[in-house]
Image 1 (cartoon, helix red, strand yellow):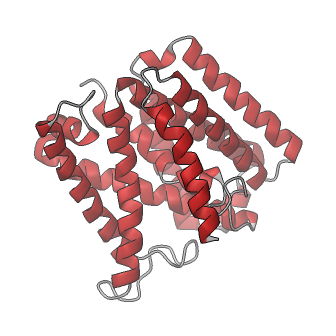
Image 2 (cartoon, rainbow, N blue to C red):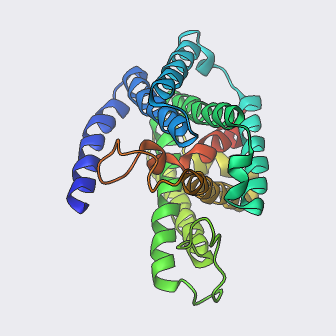
Image 3 (cartoon, rainbow, N blue to C red):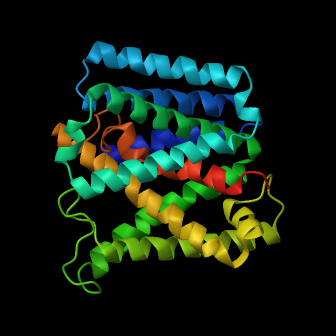
Length: 283
């Protein structure tokens, strides 16, 4: 399993990193759109649709997103779209995490499909616009989620149950997640944030980082924005775990050997990227 994980990660990085640093964002956008369309296929399958229908929905998502880019939508600010995505994530997560796994199946299948596909595609639009603004902004946003995930895992393994007792974050959804992990994830985000603030000052990147933009807009209240984004990363992970439990599957698919599916790798990014775009809008 470890060998598969490493090989898959190396292959993905070998494809995506050169595309990311190309002068034009078109290749990177196309590659990430393929991954997002695969995510819509996984989402459809987890919500009970057949393989053929799921492929149809994935192709629809690909064509719609590509069409929005073609007409130039991503060249303009879209704060209301990002705000809508944030509102949906907050409302849906508040309901589902309160009601538990069984509540997911009670939502009509078509609504589950449409809302999920909409949020997945909105995330891709955020990726596209972040890349268009600058590589530094996109990477700093991605690193926030990755730092939160890695540090949460490390803190959970080292300190789980030692600071907050036996209180689990969401035992019926993801038994391994702890409040110590959440705290460790936020500390990791803080370290990344202050490192990037220093980096922006010492060098001349192609764009300002997420953290410099948040500091410019919110000043000392930047910490509240970072807490919000960290919690959204946790929410994205938990919601996907809840949906998988409801569907009775371990992974969203087997598209990425050793890693599961696309949604298994981007679940925490789904709510964070639109929220980050909203927080830095109009600067």
